[in-house]
Amino acid sequence: MKQLKTLLLALVAMFAVAPAWACTTAVISGKFTASGRPMIWKVRDTEAYENVMKSYQGDRWSYVGLINTSDAKGEQIWGGWNAVGFAIMNSASFNVNEGYTGKFIDREGYFMQEALRECRTLKDFEEFLNKRPRPMGVAAHFGVIDAEGGAAFYEVNNETWTKFDANNSEQAPRGYVLRTNYSFTGTPGKGLGFVRFQNAADIFNKVPVGSLTPAMVMQQFSRCTYHSVLKVDYRKDYSRLPEQGAMISTDDLICRYGTSSAIAVEGINAAKGEKPEQTTGWVQVGLPYASMTMPMWCDVPLPRGLVATNPGEEALLARKAMELKKVLYPMWKQSDGYHYIAIDKMFNQAGTGLTQRIEKEEDVIFRMTEEARQYWGKSKGWGKKKEYMPAELVRSINERAEKFYEAL
Image (cartoon, rainbow, N blue to C red; front, side):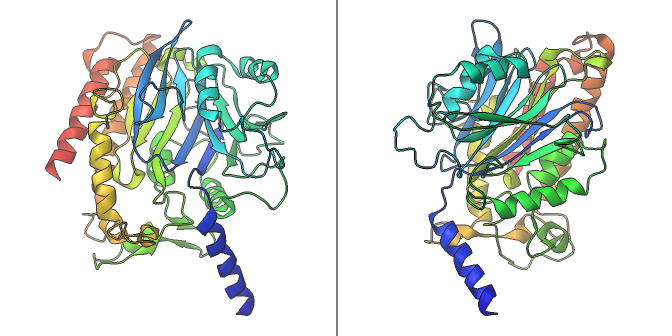
């Protein structure tokens, strides 16, 4: 009992000083997915709670990124992809660059926008890393996929980088690589996110190889309520119970108070005739429990509800999700009330929880999008059917989402 108390006190102390900009991430090879398409996934934890999506027109090709709403010029990207099928995201590492006292730090967002402007393949990205001046100003894991089926994590510090290949059976036996906020090449035992890493490892391990879908990633993983230490899945438990005002702590869950968004970028399966421009971004802007998953593509107008009307302004659906976050965390104004979420307002026996209702709508969105992607593959392009044209698909899905939130 004394040892347990000591451990709990240590955990409390760690989270009292832990930075809020921590993330849970994965790079997934086509081997592990049902479609044969590679994927990157990021649940973003940050102090910048308000996020929007932004389109860019680079010198060589267009690209799309998740940015902070306050970043009016969109100078930093926290997950994105380009029209030639290259995609990137990151998680911070807190056990590298130890002893560095210089001021050239926190360059990850600038770094990722530059990579999207310049890189087409993993090989390009490796050359990009090699050419950068040292110190690089980063302490992170960068997850990358490309249109050739490449999928890898790169642990990067000021001076060096190390590749972990999701297509390498020795490094990734089941076809994926996970990271939270400590590097395997960093100082052992230091960093953050050890419990979240085990949460992710456990839920990925339950998925049969070759069966993962975007719906599973965005619904079950981004909104995961499984706690690997306590061996409890709150979604499963409270979906069996009537709403009764129950609260749980989300501190060690993958999705928690500091989670501002989630993004998964699904690449292409070139063997099935898919084209790089058909790389699909799946995004939840706002707390994932309260945010509807929206698909989008480069060179296609982004969902109206997820972009700023004017630079620096909050997007409509992001604002709705922020309002609902306050409902789910009713004690958020109190000094430590942000630890506790109203779990049965999300999941309950009657199926009327907010997250349950969102997922019923999303089931239609995932089905519509997959039908379109299957059609595009057969058409060797976008095809001619209006309902499958990406701009029409984005428009109709955005309209569906706006009506849902207006009706709440």
